[in-house]
Image 1: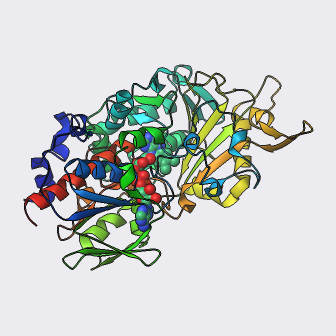
Image 2 (image 1 turned 90 degrees about the horizontal axis):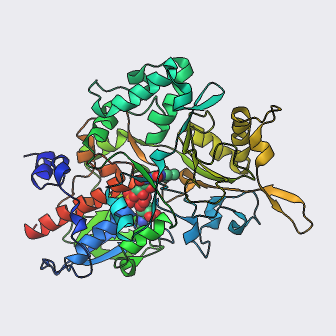
Image 3 (image 1 turned 90 degrees about the vertical axis):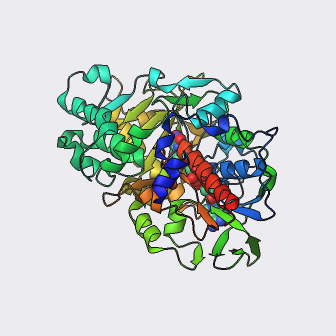
Length: 498
Ligand SMILES: Cc1cc2nc3c(=O)[nH]c(=O)nc-3n(C[C@H](O)[C@H](O)[C@H](O)COP(=O)(O)OP(=O)(O)OC[C@H]3O[C@@H](n4cnc5c(N)ncnc54)[C@H](O)[C@@H]3O)c2cc1C
């Protein structure tokens, strides 16, 4: 039996579609077990959604768990600014000046530098938010705007425009895609006028560009999802708070600023060497760090990773990624708008105050791939091409571009405008992430996500969004599902006495 079949039999993989997420009924403080008799210890590397969930499952079974996290906070790619009262990561943000303070940001809601919305109103992460009774904004109820050429319009306004219809038909059919391995660009075959819109919806959305993302992997992934396709925004609370509240019992188990540099797993115990030279021993380990960290060889494995795993890793990309937040004096894109899809500088704009701000004067931008590299190279000047793009797309009756005109600026003590108000997180430049999200290259095959997480000697297990096989790779639900799968694999190994 191969591993994919085994996972199916355990109800952990592709066959789990009808089952409710098991954590709906598990892992609470009062969970009576069943406890697992085990006198060994488990170390989890990485305190993102995957690592936190795996830790919570093991903890609830009475297993001794420690989580080692390289950075100075929990949450990983769920990183909310409202949550950072001490602004510990200010130095990791791109700011208009050295003196710029986050307090200048006018948004009257939490600003997300990583995961921003919840996919699926009945998904794992939505369940977390719902369990706290948090109001959620229905993003799909608001019209998006789509760019073709220099025009941006709603779906209703584009109507029967053949290029617009071609892209939307491709996106709607993607979950049922049954063609061979091909980039989104090749699979869609849309006109040159529609390329940027396709790139936004079928490329950037999945972590790269339409000429790199494999339609034959992403399509079936979408088709296999167990939750609905709606998108929700948390009205009042930071995403990071939801994660940390849900896993409040894991928090004391997490050690921050503990970067793992090597994993020796040939002996009876797994020996982890940390950045500071200290060593930690564990009977079993779950590696829940981003794929880009593994691909970069930032953690040395001894013995080295098996060829099947490194081959599988090479068939996934993790591109550069920049998230920007920009404050404006006036909403010129429509306070009821959700997304603006199809820019060249920025493929993906989001009206992040939608349904939760009194003013809705903030845009967040999510850019992956070569466009993110371009912005990253500009540093503080990354705002300029974005404003230029908005100027082209949004003009007033006199033809004056709205981006440059409406950008909000810090006002000094004398009432003069100073630097513009924006902040950005350059995920590719962060040494503990080195990129955005994983995506399958055209060379990837259906088994690669399974091979990428095959346990080593029943001692080292792998989690993280890139290892998800439930159809949610690349997002929080996938990260959670992967943590659950890895924890269950580890438990099976304990129960089997291996
Ligand atoms: C800009 C952006 C926007 C996104 N938007 C959404 C969205 O709207 N909705 C959604 O569902 N998903 C979104 N995602 C994806 C989502 O954030 C991720 O899929 C998910 O958070 C990944 O969780 P993870 O646990 O797999 O990894 P991570 O959250 O990356 O956690 C891995 C942890 O490992 C740590 N680490 C790294 N190296 C080491 C080491 N050597 N030793 C110890 N620790 C280490 C890292 O510091 C990190 O904390 C977005 C991602 C990005 C980047």
